[in-house]
Length: 312
Ligand SMILES: CC[C@H](C(=O)O)C(=O)SCCNC(=O)CCNC(=O)[C@H](O)C(C)(C)COP(=O)(O)OP(=O)(O)OC[C@H]1O[C@@H](n2cnc3c(N)ncnc32)[C@H](O)[C@@H]1OP(=O)(O)O
Image (cartoon, rainbow, N blue to C red):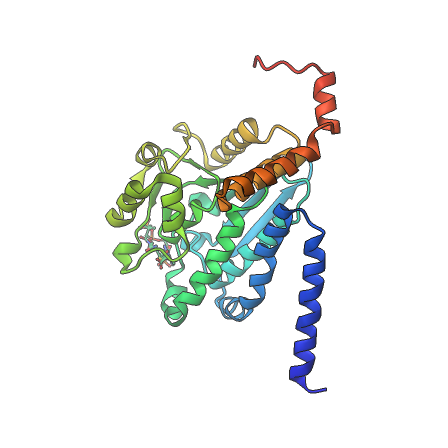
């Protein structure tokens, strides 16, 4: 049997297995699994190319006790700018988080007191001939990041510029150090956004504010970013970098990650599904199916038993 026939039969087997598996899943899980796995095969060639651009890493710590993970951009000598290898690292770390059943929350941050100063300019200069493929790869990665069944927050310290500002919009929330700066500087670099921030900013802030941030290329202070609605909380002055991380973690846990991981994951996934399926009946059908999984379940019975009061 020639190579083409072997490849064709292999692909047919993979596809039919995928369809059989997917048919057993409720719509939401089928939808999210389809999004996170199938297109990655088409991205293998660009993944291989990006991986050749060494420098830095994206590291991940997952705390099974608290359900809080920390993803760290680790290229401090270059203000955590993203090399090709870091883009591949990030995709792999997100795959780990997609499979984390007990996860509740994620903090995305940079090492050494800076979040991220964008694409690594050495990499950018060498990758000028495959911008579209790199953008496709980053769009897929950052959409998966935003759609994780975890509550994610970007901790903006020091510089958050260009692609770094784009990364920050791929989290549910943003918490900022009072002395940090954030700016979508792409237009000053002779570009528009390459990692999906235009789409996410319009969604997040509306057309006018998105247009203002992108066309002004303004580097915002923390207070300016908060008043624009780009940032959800600005921390107090005088904290060390480590204390800012501790405060950010407290903010995430006390606001959004106090409850059962199952319910947090189900709620986030339903919000993602509804965001991506704006048809009312489709979204409500999914909401009913998720609700039915918990109605009469152990968590509800325990809450009824405890006679929970909501006065604090
Ligand atoms: C799709 C990607 C996207 C796009 O292409 O649209 C981008 O993100 S392009 C990159 C956008 N980012 C920038 O243009 C930031 C450039 N850097 C700066 O403006 C400054 O470095 C700043 C303001 C962040 C900090 O200035 P400061 O004077 O405090 O420090 P240094 O400039 O001396 O920087 C320290 C050290 O880091 C290196 N560095 C900083 N940013 C990058 C970067 N994006 N890529 C690679 N290296 C970076 C800088 O070169 C210094 O290293 P050294 O070895 O001392 O030169």
